[in-house]
Image 1 (cartoon, rainbow, N blue to C red):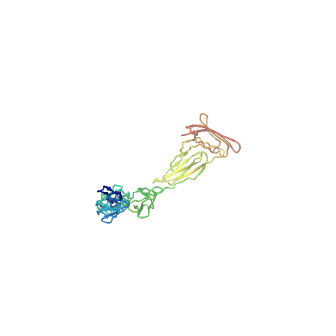
Image 2: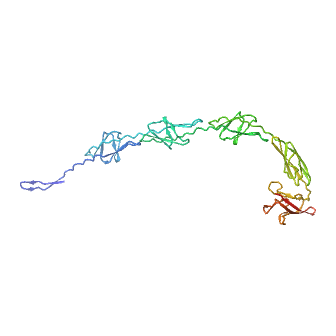
Image 3: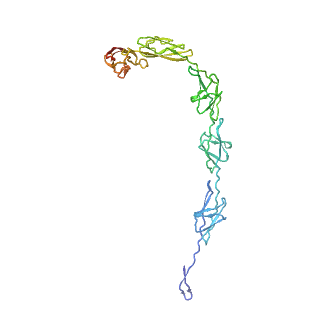
Length: 433
């Protein structure tokens, strides 16, 4: 607003002032400032008006794009150059500098991998079916390489791999997981071990490299194989061969093998069981073999031959082992039972507590009808080392949990018979080691 006065130049008089309003010149909007971002493997390039004002109107040349919140420009055609002006309804800005955006970068297609199964002759294989020689392939985990036509080399059997393709700028997504298997295992040729026939069993054949997971086929058919590779069902004298398979691959044929029939054993006949009195000798005979060995040798005149004479001091089971010309044996036994009149107490005068299961204990005989029995044993210094009132208990040759030394030991025995008569025995016992 300004005040206007008028002056008469002839009189120098000045009028009173009059207020006059002068409108301001409208301001033009600022020229739009454009920032562009390059294209990527995931999206096209973009453009933004950095000094965007939401109350203004933006006009693009050529037409097509629009501007949204924050100044983001949409609807641009990649590779086309644009300018933009803005208007506030009264005035328009000058045109912006020319700008454009690039199209999204090309990403290689995801590799497609085909695999072939392993066979009895070859390993499994893998190849890229959409192979492109212009891209670079990367494996995870690392190790494999690409050969001609997309054939994949250097894979570890049983390892799962994925694969990406790169053109130097963009990389594809990972392929589906893939793996290959090693060449199928062909079973080893069965190895056969045979053992000779024995006196009691026929010969035996065994697959020494037997595996329970394999199937074995015999020629001619008939035999079967069990735990540990033992072959059963063979006909002695027949030659066989065998192959193995694991359900996929077959072994070669084994060498021919056969077994012998059982040799057979002699049948030994021996004297019948009998009883005897102390001091009596009994003749024992055996037949059915070519050689004979008797045991125990205690109280025998000889321990070999078809006829022996026994003079035992206690009930004894004598056994004889007879052998034939093949070395086959049979065993027969005869029991000689000592008969002692009740009250006719018998105490052996020697025994050998050496844990060989022969005369290892000193036992009393003929006490069964006696009462109030007391049995004592003393060492050479008169020290009591064993005592029992139960005559069925035998002395094991120990004193204070230790075996006594070899030598002579005194004993006393006392008991009462059914008539009330006291029976006493005294003597010495020799301990042998």
